[in-house]
Length: 458
Image (cartoon, rainbow, N blue to C red; front, side, top):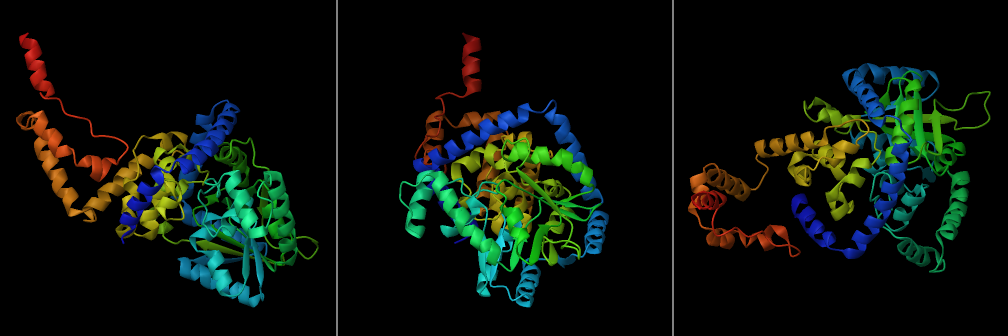
């Protein structure tokens, strides 16, 4: 079955699942309330977004020089930078590091880039246990699932769902409170932190002028992940750059306000290398794997390149009516929602994933909320055009659109067919396209122009 067909079937199944809809509506309503408060703290949030957008466009205009500057500065502090063209190269590096350090356990803070290369699967195939330490990621890992959302991995689960899961997996009481479940996970993870040979993080920002890795999180798990293991592996997309450390004062609040509604994320840590000889804490070794994996293909596209400015705040997902209807798993990709629909055809191929660019109403809400002003709807339209130009749309669609264009190009053609026949011709769309929950609007017996003429004569 094609990816497009799988997407359609999954969307039809989940769109009318009332339990899922209610859970997402509740969780996103809490997000919306928090973000409204977060935005109210700004005197001029649009100015902040404009400044952030300009910085990220500067990065894209000088991408190569900032990457080399970052590499030079972090290497000078003792880290080893490894350039990975794709998933295979990244996982080859990972396997080698785990082998060299005889790793049997690694702990990992939340990172969508590691999801992109399926790090957990790679580690476990080598006999190395990989443990998610973010609470939401821990929950979906225990459930045998992937993150549902790029910021809130377990958004699709209610507290009742999680209590049932913990009852099945850990024999906790079925009526356990969120506080009790959180405390249980905390105790489990403390043992993992102190036993792991390797800690893995992503990067929210790569800071060129100091050679720094900036990681933001709310639970302290990122700090614990890097405090005890002797080896710290960073896996980051090459687009995560900002030029100067001083710019974090702009990006930290924007990321927090758009991601969770906070004024600032609880923990903001900058790593610049392994521990020095005169330091007590920190890893002995630090590896930074810089991942391309299709990003330079996005950069080469004259219309899609601006999507690389994304700071992964998740705001576009929470605003998108399609995402809120069909959920994160329907996309069957690492990155879902509007940003995923833009990026995935480039990262995984238009042949299999061009349908995602059609999974949008083009309402523009994603553009409105984006903190770095990515023109998402424009890129979605450009991707649709590319899909048609590549001949990837169904032949029947091409015929229908040609026929529609022929009829609607001339008022006389539109008026030639009476309303009763138009209704008979469009009625199958109730079952083929519109679904069982709504009906195709009926055409009037007379067209608008005919009614207009009749009225003028009266």
